[in-house]
Length: 434
Ligand code: AMP
Ligand code: MG
Image 1 (cartoon, rainbow, N blue to C red):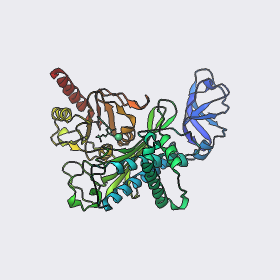
Image 2: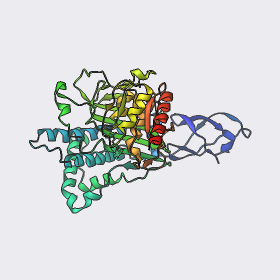
Image 3: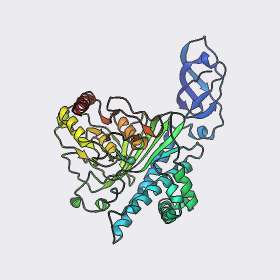
Image 4: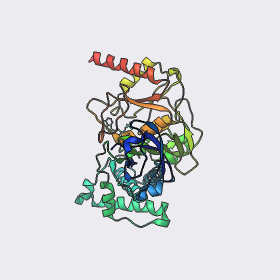
C-alpha cells in the first residue's frame, strides 16, 4: 500500500492529489507523523493521477485539536511561549547579577544556572502545551552533574529560578516544580534526533558560555554607554524537525536591539530583546520580546558586494577570521566584518542588517544541529539561502551533528553564486598554501 499525502486540510477533510488507485479501498495517511487515518476512496484506473477529495475518520486527539489550524501553528505558539519564558529566565539572572554588589566575570555559575534553567523551562512548557504529541527533544545539556552530590545546590537554584519565572509570568496557572521535575525536564533533551518523526532541537543559551552575561549591564544602560553591540549576544534557539527537515524555528535574542545593528547603521532605539520566528512556507517574523505585534522580515536584496556587510563569530576560535577576510576580499566586500555571538547573527541577517554570514570552524570541530536549526529556517523563510561551503543544503536528519563541507555560508539569492565562487577560491588558496 502506498502513502497518499494530503496537501491541505479543511476541517476533517483532506484534499490532495495522488494515484488514487494506489490506495485501493483504504488510504492510510501519515500526517504530522500521526497514525493513522482510514478512509475509503473509489479506485480509478491504475496510474491515473488526479485530484482526490476524501473524508477521513480518525480518533487522534492531536488531529482533532488541530484540524482547524494550519500545520505547525500549535507547535509554533508553544515554541514562542517556551522561548520567551526561557528568555525571561535569562533576563532575571542578568538583572540579579546587575543588582548584586559582587560581580565577577570569571564566575560562570549564574550562566550555568540560566543554561539548565532555560532547558528545563523550554522542555516543561513544550510538553505541557502539546500534551497529545510524542515528545522528543535534542538539546545541549544533560542532568548528569546536577544529580551528583556536588550539584545539589545548583539544582536547588535552578528549580527556584524556573519556579520564580513561571510564577511571575504565568501566575494564573502556576504550580511549583520539584527538583525531580526539573531533572526530568532537562533529561527530556536526551533524544538523538534523526530522520524519522518529530524532534525539537534546543540550544538553551546559544552564545559563548561565560561571556554571555559578562555584558549583562549593556541592555540596561543608556545607549550611549554601550560600546559593544556585536559581542555579548546570546539566543534561546528552538527548532522543530519533522522527518529530518526543520519546519519551524524560534530565536529569542534578549540583548539584540530592535533596530538594525549592521555596519553604518546607528541604532535609534534603546530597546533590546527580539523574538524571531518562522514556519515552513510562511515567512519569517520578528517582534519585541516584550510582546509587540510582529513584523515580517526579509533578507537584504542587494546583489552588490560593495554594499554588503558580513557577520561572523565574535570568537576567532569558533570561526576562522582569516578565511572569512580572504573570502570577503575576493568577493569585493568593502565593509569590515560585524562580529556577533550566537544565532543572533541569523536573526540580524533575516531582517537585512547584514548580507552575508560566514562560519568556518577550525579543523576537527563538528557542528551541532542546535547551533543552526532555528537560525537557518528564520533566514530561509526570510528569503535567504543557508548552505555548507560547497553549496549543499544543511542536512539535519543525521542525528546531533551536521556534517558540513568546511563551513556554513548564508546570504541572499543574488549574492550566493558569487559568494560560492569566492569561497571555493579562498579554500583552494588555503589548501595550496599548506
Ligand atoms: P558563535 O556564537 O558563532 O561563536 O557560536 C557559538 C557556538 O559555537 C556555541 O554555541 C558552541 O556550540 C559552538 N562552538 C563551541 N566550540 C566551538 C568551536 N571550537 N568551533 C566552532 N564552534 C564552536
Ligand atoms: Mg550554541
